[in-house]
Image (cartoon, rainbow, N blue to C red; front, side, top):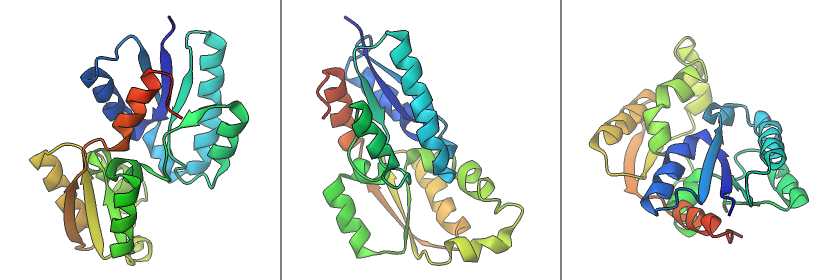
Length: 203
C-alpha cells in the first residue's frame, strides 16, 4: 500500500510531522514542504506547488496527494489549480483560521480589525521573516507605514511554551508596542486534516 503525501507550507511542516507521529501515522502519510518565507512573496507559492505536485505524481510513490496550504494570499489561484487537478487542501484562508478554528477566528477578527497574528512558527522566526524579511532592520522608518494600522498582536499558540510566549511578547514590542494577547489553540483543524489525509478522506 502506497502512502499518501501532504505538500505543505514550511510554516506548518513541524506541526504536520508532530501530528503524524502523535497519531502513529508514520508509513502511511509523508510530508514535504515549500519555503515558509514565500508568504512574503505569495506569487511564488503556486508555481512551486505545481512543481512539487508534478514531481510527486511522476514518482508514482504516493496513493494520494493533499495540499497543506490555505489560500495564503494567492487570491483564489490556488483553489482554481486544486480544482483543476482534483486535489484537496485544508480549509480556510490562512493558518490562523485553521489553527484557531474558522468560527473562532472569525470572532477574533471581528473583535479587533487592527490585529497582527502569530503562530508558533512565526513567533520562533519573527525576526527573520518579518523584521529582516521586510527590511525593517535596515529601514526602521518603514515600520509606521507597514504596521502603523495595527493596535494588537494575538499569538495563536499551538503549544504552551513560555519561551515562545516571550518571543511573541517581544514581537509585539518590535511592532511599535502593540497590545498583546495569547490564545492556546493547539493544532485545531490541522489535526483533523492530517488524520483524514492519512485515511484518504480529507475532503
